Image (cartoon, rainbow, N blue to C red; front, side, top):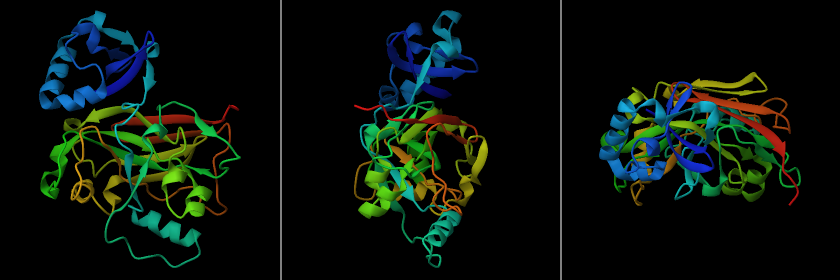
Length: 298
């Protein structure tokens, strides 16, 4: 299923995508989960109940998609979004070249940082631009992973069993803030810097998460094009590493890294400007489409 979080009649609620319609479980059965996190917390039984309701629903439980405002699938995660840095070999090479040094050896262990939970943005939401904070905004298309059940010490061979589903993330980055502060968090966590969605595709519908095309376009021009098979650390390695000493909780979100083609590594460097439209897509999931807009004065 393609699971959504939508706003209909000013009410935020769970939805299921069906072409140009959206199924609203609350209209079918008020005992069904009515938010994404409640659904994830409910485990396989909750998902099975939702699937049954969706497959047996009458027309009254659906609304046209253009009547449902699409929000991020998990509008406010319980924890920061966990992110993999330098997880594609070609991105390692372009990053080294842009900094004027020989390519570093590939990482021996996953490089991990986080994006603030309140940086999450809607799949079609505006990306705020404030030149007084940063004028070097960059794009990064990534496959997102949603954890389905809480656990610690997850073995690699069992890791994919802990995945609830997959989504698309644009890891928008303020490059000069990354360099200035010698770490990633501030430059990755500005408000609106984590467009996500447009849906979560349940894990059973993604045959192989390591064979998905992903791409990014800016104003219709392709900037990134790759496949998840080129990740240095596979998803199961990432989950096993993260869970070694901490509990991964149901609903946690993992951004699995970006391939080459980012703006700062281009010659000359390219950065997003007000009015630019960024599209990030992952095969079988969908496309984010976000316009860069001047932040209103507060």
